[in-house]
Length: 106
Image (cartoon, rainbow, N blue to C red):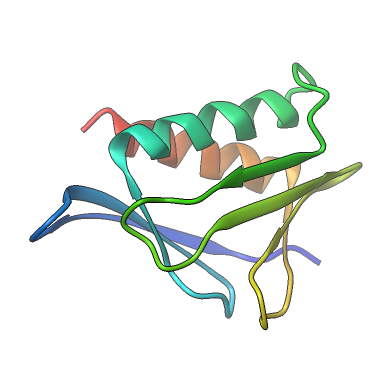
């Protein structure tokens, strides 16, 4: 089963413009625009089969929670300590990658 996500770009008083990812019942993760671009490229690469990576990890500077995703055959599984795993099928993974890319373009 796949989970939905939301991505909101807003201004933070200390970090400037941030992309805030909310995924299922997990804590929000806040990415700088540069971090959003990095995660977007990684997600797109694994979704399109251009990367053999099995894990994507980012510890965003403006977030209290890491972004940790395992790459599986049918999509990614995002984990947060103490929370239920969130699954994104490949189409959702690509949609998230595109939204992060757009957010990073500012």
